[in-house]
Image 1 (cartoon, rainbow, N blue to C red):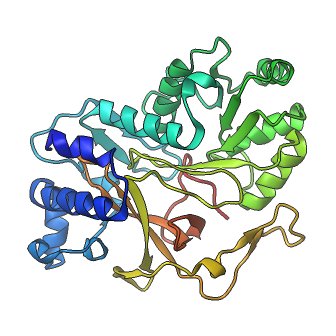
Image 2: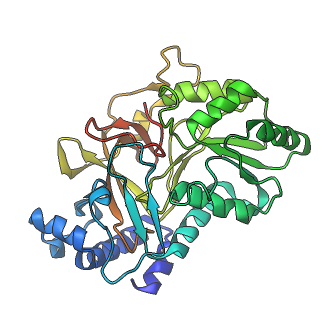
Image 3: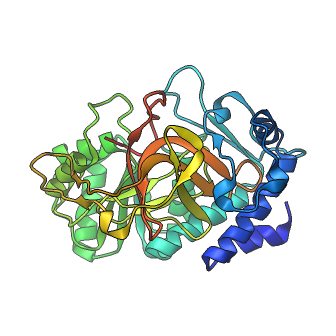
Length: 353
């Protein structure tokens, strides 16, 4: 891949620049990624005729379970593997350039939250030594190292120690990120309910891993808000097959970094892209919803499958058709509302209703 293009994707500052880079990446991968190339050949798609981002075919995410999705002539530096809670076939992402992943998640974090060095980062996840093949754990291990705070680290199964650190952060006011899988955050909420200060951000990454019954997101957020006294619960949207993350800073609406975009595909015609929902059709997320749904849908919402363009996936495939259902809005934000019936719920994926 052209080094100048690698640099350019992290300098995208407009829709026009994104579209130009996306088309360059597409035509490169259409030629040099054998799995993607064969997929489009079987669909009788003339890749040379594709001139618009909306016309790009998206590779079903399931291919990462059955094939080595990588561009020709590249050797992997790291292999990320899904948690294995979804059946006999784990998804694998062969990452040829680990520094590209580090840059993507670091710049994405800085965009939404500022410098990692300013935070105490507490992860309710397995440690890197326990789960080195997890892209989320790999990311958090590096962010914890960048943090440099003496209390930053992994605290799964160390809830008493974690509660003590949270009390320290309440006392000293140091900006803190508490990030964890849903079941671990619920364990902490039940065993050590602590009213946290405004300088402490609680972020869920989803995932019950069979430990608990899956609540809808609003119910999860209600429980965590009640236990920790925070105004909102943040969320992270990522997966093994992507090198970038989207973040929700409350309300269940996610935003992407400039080199990552979401499109909505017609659930009845996977090669057709739907238009974003009008701004007035945005749902309202209520943490005190008596129905427990948290979402009041309004007419005009374009709902369908989430197609994700992640230009950091330069060396594998940047155009992924996920198994998630959701809605995209005119400002580029999106929500996740569920999964297709045929798609397994992955242990480390975003927790969905």
